[in-house]
Image (cartoon, rainbow, N blue to C red):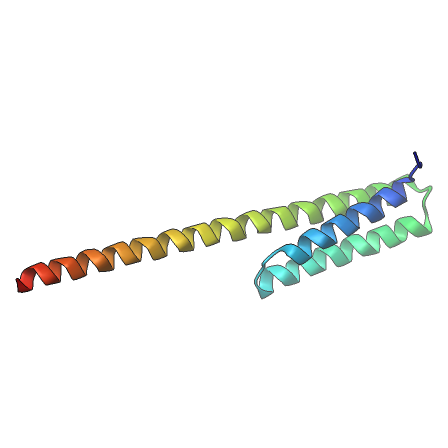
Length: 109
């Protein structure tokens, strides 16, 4: 079993978040927010690479990664919720249209 350093863990976590971000089906505004958060995390991790023994630097990088993860997961949940709502609205619209067409057809009979 190989031993990892805190910086190794930060880099692995950033890679995991990058994969998650790339898989998110976000619009341009959400994508920009995700990219900015990943850039901030990357800068914080870069500082940790330069000073791996600095507890404040490591703590800042960890906190930045946590914020980035919360942003990505929150946006992903909101995107999924929005898609569900759009699907429900489309279904409701179709039912209303079908009901209206049926009533119009009955009125002609």
